[in-house]
Image (cartoon, rainbow, N blue to C red; front, side, top):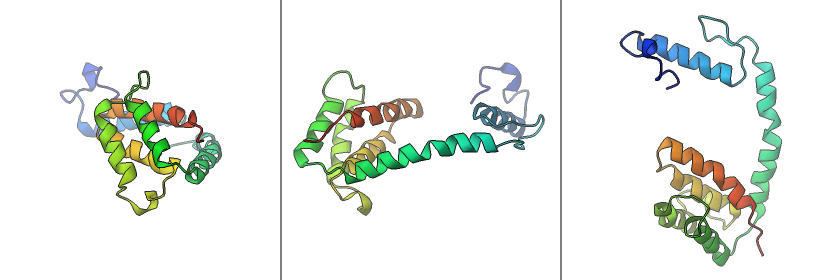
Length: 152
């Protein structure tokens, strides 16, 4: 929680409702929303929403490209090997088998196709087994790792 470092806002001094309200206010402000004091009512959300929506176009194009990028079995196995075995990637090695299983035996029908999108889903699904901070770090590195791959 954002206020864990502040002794005045621990549960001894502030009710959980007030702590939640303050946390919500801080998060909204960090996202670029203007928040009126003593409430979490958003005053001017339009600029922040516009900034978020501007990023949807490139993200949509990336997803469509990955959905169209077919992977051979050998390419998928090589990517999984490179991600977990070769130095420098920083992905938790214990998830290699889980990613392999999720890609080659997907749980969801929409990921049956052998595409980069399905492989990305296998990675992110396996990362859900991590604690929040390692999950965030692994997911943040994943896009760059997969974008560097050029199928032959």
